[in-house]
Image (cartoon, rainbow, N blue to C red):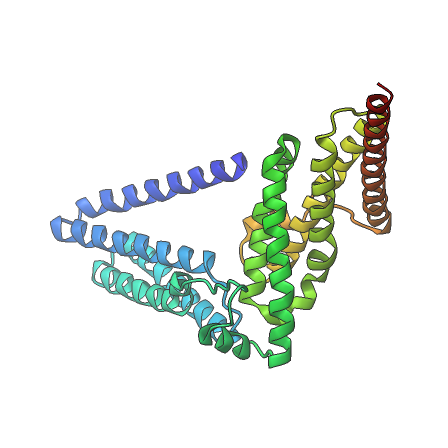
Length: 325
């Protein structure tokens, strides 16, 4: 992050030096040349900001819109370069006209993709009958009525699990720490929102919906139950510590699920790709990891059963003592 910030500062510094040189050269050309170059630089700055914003928010999968946007990006880049070259050659008559063309092409590109980000995200409660707006959204993505019912039932269960996971993780200090370190709840909610936006890709989130999310909920709930036991053995503490590690692994795997799901949306952002494409940042959730989750659930369940059995035995002994007295 610091490296990127330093590069950004260097680029800003270069831009300021170039702009200062151009303006200083424009002073020698008289007031008209100076203000003409100042206005041209302002248009170039606005054009650059429009292009950057458009690229950062470009999430439309329509190939025609993408192709059109990049066509205008190229045109804006060519005319912007022509503007700077005209300034260096003191061709003041063409400078402002080229700057206007650059702004025009940048604005058209922004209209193609940049303004799309201002649209309200698609939302669904899954607790009430589907609205006409959401029904149209589902049909537009290619879902049949049967697919819609399956999707809504699946997402309704996922929503309940996310709410349950949030309630459990925020109630236990160690689980809160996992959430802070791994963004567990934020990632789960982001994945949920991404699925609502693109319901036709439900199968791509099978691991998240049917393994990683429900396993996280089950382990978190059992951890919370066992953590309240008044008496804990060394084995109990060892299992609790291990369950924290498993929850952290599951959190990283959910993050992996999400980055895979939205990889196409962020493919144009090299800064994001730098972090997404590093294999070391992805949890290796293979068969061995899945067996660990299963074993962890069994161990937590056994500890809970043993604790309840001991409690029942203790209560019976107390009742027997009271009877003898």
